[in-house]
Image 1 (cartoon, rainbow, N blue to C red):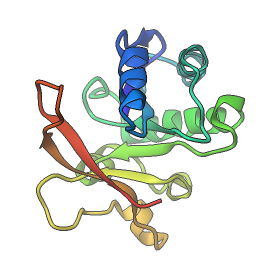
Image 2 (cartoon, rainbow, N blue to C red):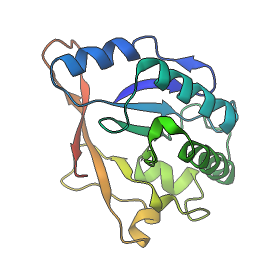
Image 3 (cartoon, helix red, strand yellow):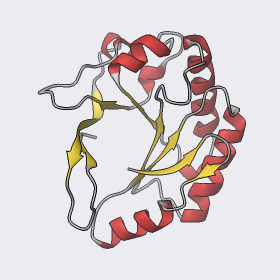
Image 4 (tube, rainbow, N blue to C red):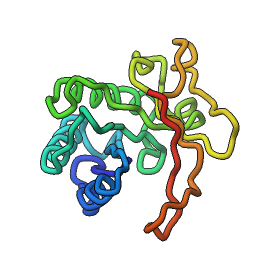
Length: 177
């Protein structure tokens, strides 16, 4: 997964380059958007996502897309504001051709989800879960998914991975889709 966008105005300058380079060496790619609950409207975030992915040639038939929901940059949002605006963004994206009818993954960690999002307010469990839970034998699944009898689709199990040609640690994920 490569960061493509953030909020309403940020497009990662390296997204297209990283995406192309990964695909050249046979790495399956995906894009993610860093969600901003208060500083950007869901509509403006959708527009940023769609224009950036379209310009890059994103193909939902071979690539994943996720919304990254974390505390950083969202500290002032209440759990209801987080849930309301995340739900609105996800709903807006469902109607966009660029995703070809596929629902975005929701990226989060259990602690953030439990304490900073009103997870039972909407049917978030209908979206595939990309859970971050490092250095454990099994990830903790947020109650929203657990109550629906669902588990993770992608598990980010480490932030200390190494890949030839990359000088810094990278996140490592298990995928079961």
